Length: 220
Image (cartoon, rainbow, N blue to C red; front, side):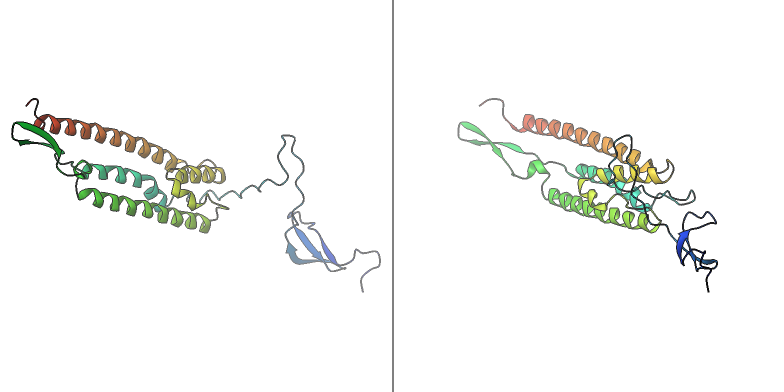
C-alpha cells in the first residue's frame, strides 16, 4: 500500500529534468514518460497573436536540404524560354499585281507565329509547365520525409517562381541559414528568360520589317 503522505499515482514533472512527464505509481518513479501538454503561449510584448502558428522544429545539421526536384523546378523556365528560338516566322507579306495596280497580301495568317512549329512549341511549353508542378510536388514530399514541418506547399508552383522562393525561405528558417541556393538560381533563370524573350522579340521585329521591305513594292 502507498504511504498516505505520498502523492497519489499520476503523471508529474520528470524529476530527471527531461522536460516531460514521468509516471509516479504512488511509491516510486517508473520508467514511463510522456510529453508535457502544450501550455497556452504567453502574450508577446511585440503583439504576437497567441493563435499564431507554432514554430517549426529545426532540422539536424546533417539533414540535406536540396533535392534534384527543386533544381529542376528552378531551371525549367529557362528551357521554356529557349523554345522561342524554334520559331522562325515565314515571310508574312507578298506583293501581287493585278493589271496596273499592286496589292499587299498576307500569305499565311499563322506565318508570324512560325507556322505549324508554333503549335509544337506551345505543346512542349505546356508539358514543361506540368513537369514543373509534378517536380514541386515531389520536392514537397521529399522535404516532408526529411523532417521539415509544414513545407511550402507545392500548389504554389502554379504561380511559377513563387514556389522556389517560398520553399527556400522556409527551409532556411529550419536549417540554420542553409537552403537559399534554389531561390538565387530561380531569380537568375527568371532574369535570363526575360532577356531571351526580349532578344527574340527584337529579332522577330527585325525579320518582319526585313520581310516587308523585300516584298512590299514601294510604288506602283
